[in-house]
Length: 357
Image (cartoon, rainbow, N blue to C red; front, side, top):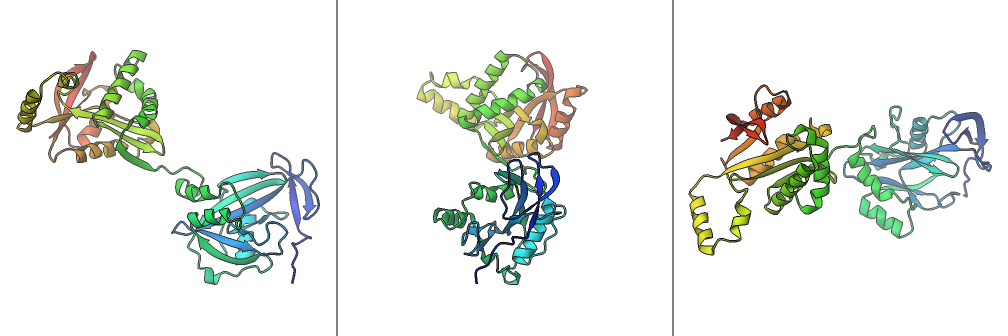
């Protein structure tokens, strides 16, 4: 039997600024200019990153027989957004989920109003759902590839952002805050712009970085370390949030000499160096101010250590004891097992060597 949408349903009317006007609108009547109502969509994901999708009944007025996200509908008069989401879940799926503390992940404007999208994570037992026969033909789980394929086949509502929903649930928490997903690796030239952007942010914390000339020299240093596989980065997405430069101590001027020496000289130097204990020097370690409670500096140093031979000596110059700028840096290196060594200076600034044996 053909079923029709509920024509007696009333909606609250809103202004363009999403303020209630105090008036209502009967579903099915034409909205006039400046009148808006509220709609909601709920997207349920399970622990396998599959989306619960429903197929609309073939006699539905809007998008008949098409596959849709888990549940959707318009807020009725008196509904708040989260109340509407909870009600639609119960009406369409027979699923009770407390949405009282939920906030929409994002809102899409459409010609007739505002559409709030919620993301819920729950392993729902489909066999226990009670489908609203007037609205829902069937339900199933689908992963990202299946959903994209169904859109291409023309059997799923063509939300332009549907593929991104799978990424959103991984990258944002329930309050809409972006989750940090830190990864480490050896830097390439594709990382240089973001690396230098971080350097600009932290330059005031490092002696001798206060001029444009110094920043240009530092950029050349980063490029040289990238070429010699001595540049480690930590990134959140595509943004560099931590950097570390290291190289074998004493190798700073070696690059220019290697081109002019003979093959015999190179072999002799390599044979000699094999019998000598190398010391590696950290020449730069910096972390974005907003990421300094995530142990990124420790991860950068550990990443470097794992690339060296076991028991390799590592040295770094940092602030001297009593320097207010260096309290955190000294405590950090000592927490990793570095011990204070000789005092010296860097570009006229007093520093102290720390050594990890």
